[in-house]
Image 1: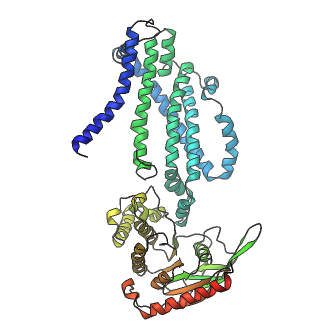
Image 2: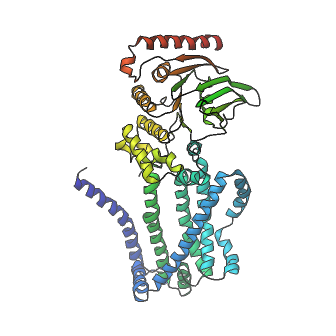
Length: 264
Length: 265
């Protein structure tokens, strides 16, 4: 490929990322401009943008909500991923731990995350503790299952090699099981990241007075429909950012480099 | 005690029991290695030669043997240990480590500091002509290079006993010849006993100072053959040696005897 062909390829890819969004925005704006529906039912992208500028630059209230949600999300991710990894490895290594927790997990896993909100409010009150707890719960399950299946599918021959060199248990976990389980751990974290956003918005709608979820539910009661849509757009943008800037990079630097999955 | 041999296998038998019947895999195996040497265990598929190697390595479910014991410098073994390192028939390089880190893996487990590890790995990278590939990952290596890396990983620990379970069975014939020459070279550098299990008569003659010929079911040592060929050996010289041809003929006869008597199909 020549240089101009490569740059042409890049242009093409960028076009096919931007164009679909642009087309949707255009149609959306066109319908809104026709004034078939009242503004409070169907605001166009222009008024969402206007709302964004007002909240992000003039009053900066949006930044506060984003910050609150991101802090809760980070705490929830950190505890959920750590907990999922720890129990997943323990269950993958020890059949008694696995037997003990398996029925409990099947039972608890079936309870939707949002069910815990009232209980969490009783325990922790309104605010970041309750929201973080809910995020922890919804992130925990996919990471746990991902780690467990990853540890179980890591070939025994690698553990045997480590044992031959007199590896201690923590060395087998650190140097064999965790990297071996990496493909399904990343998959679990990816599912967890998506679930985390549902958790944070759901919990904030009920059990907080700040955050993107609270901003959305608060805007609804004032019929500020453009703010409701703005909240959804913000969530979409952050989801993509987490995927591209964190998860995709983690994947490229680990399992793609190791040849455990094929590069796209 | 100085007089104890490096390795002694003392009347080892192994019986695998299942619900229906039991299989005698090994019967009364005796083996001794007094000094650094290259020992080949030759036998047809299913003669229990891999079982014997796994017992020496201390791996379950082969270890412990049903009867008998394995002694290193007079002390009975209790399980796997880093005085005996095995190179397996399949690839066991860790996919998440590059060639250099794979070679250093055993040393890292021992807690040896990075600078020292690197010194050792650089030495083996050079010796095995792997320098160019030291930052490649296992999935990027050819079969021959994988084998060399596995060998380097085992040698890096300077084991007293190197166990090789048909290490070149999965590479192409031409690569195998050059790997055999390299193995012979590196095995004579360190002071260690090398035990190689194979079903290739030529490989056994080329590499071995001694060859233990095993018979099939129950696995017994039928005869021990001493290889009186000059060192260092090269395939190009060896194929014209009379002694090579004589040994080859003798070993073929030994193995065929067993086939016609035991294999009633």
